[in-house]
Amino acid sequence: MRAVIRMASVVLCCVAVVPAIAEAKVKPTPTQIAVAEADLDSIRLELSSPSKKCLRERTLTFVDLDTGAVFLRPVVREASFSVALSDVPQGVTRVRVMAEPARIANRLCESDSVSITFDFATLSGSPKGDGTFGGVLFSSVEACEPNRTISLYEISADPVFAGSDFADASGAWTIAAAAGTFEARADLLILRDRDSVIYCLPVASPAWTFEEPPEEEA
Image (cartoon, rainbow, N blue to C red):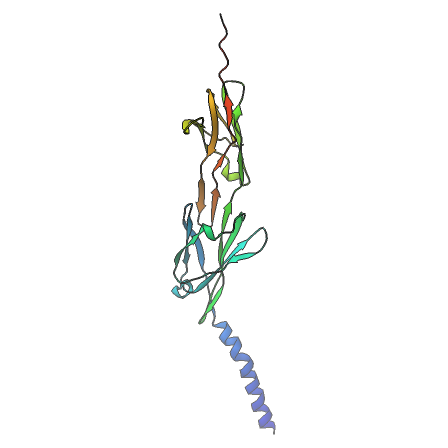
């Protein structure tokens, strides 16, 4: 009887130990997701990992950070892949793209994420009273304001380029005044590094009309 009890204890011990040994053999393997390219139509992302097994059949989760809603969840089968901006719902401004963790054989492919940000901006423009036009570019993303090129167009007929300036640290700009109907514009700017991409979206000011003051008679 004692031999039977001893044997049962050994079996139970082995049953408890085997899963622990199996779990110990799982190798955590880092995965990195990075922004490779970005334009007005799409973003190309790349997965990298010491193990090629971690680069296939990976699930990506696209989350609207303002609401927490998941709006896209593709399974990618290649290390390099593109995401169409048309797949991002209108009005979404902050997105996290996460490569979800995956268990592949004895490897645990770890998670990683990148961010996508779309700014909301306004641009003002008008005569300043000192012989110049001026205004301020305001963006919901601070990085989209300084050193942004502001272009001035005369728009009474077909738009004609009339000058440009770089917005200063506070988004302010100044360009010499002239007679006509004008509009200031800030073109698309894309700021990118490995972990994020920011779309500083194009924005135009309301139009204004300016007439040269009459010259004073001597």
